[in-house]
Image 1 (cartoon, rainbow, N blue to C red):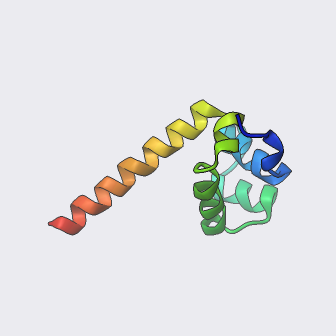
Image 2 (cartoon, helix red, strand yellow; image 1 turned 30 degrees about the vertical axis):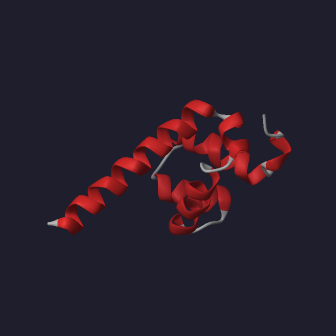
Length: 84
């Protein structure tokens, strides 16, 4: 099991936010900018990197598995569109 200290406070905050972002008032992109001071694009880059880390899996396995599945579906759809 990876040590949870491998994740920064921001990393844990991003994972926790992603698990329950719908609880925050307003649009998700606004909440991302206000809470993390990141552009939406950068937030998703960081999130995609995070979900590949063992420490993130240790922190919240259900969330990480769900996000990985969603990413895989998006990747397959993009590949299918390119093949046409």
